[in-house]
Image 1: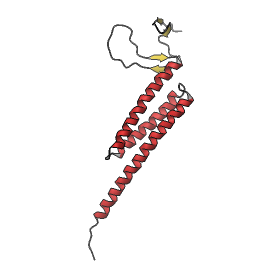
Image 2 (image 1 turned 45 degrees about the vertical axis):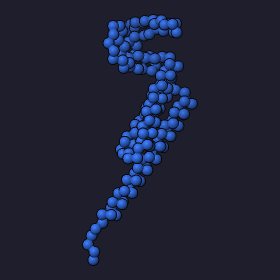
Image 3 (image 1 turned 45 degrees about the horizontal axis):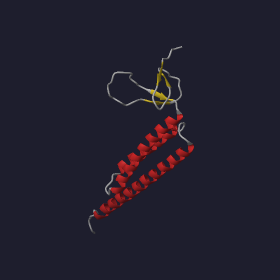
Image 4 (image 1 turned 60 degrees about the horizontal axis):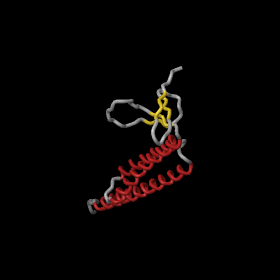
Length: 157
């Protein structure tokens, strides 16, 4: 059996936290830090958070940021008159991918009530994107029909 090293971190707010290194079989939320600053000390490549309350707070913050970005995109698209349906379809596919990620990966860490509210918000964003796509496609179809009707010139007999 592989021996693991343990370190103890002490701060003012938290009395003691034991940190296990090189532990593979621990169930928790795995994260990798994105900090690229060079400093002397311990280099952290990955981390496992075991505290469910902390994991829930981190995931709620992460999900809130992502939903805010979708809402900002939706607002910018609804304000513009000339929008490309390709961008809307990309946003719709990305939202669906994110919904599946939340349901598959984050479901075990979040409450059922919060998950239901989150899915309702995603459904609302989905409906708005779909309605905007329908409106844009109808406008494009109407313009195409006008162009087809106006271009008919032929021989009169």
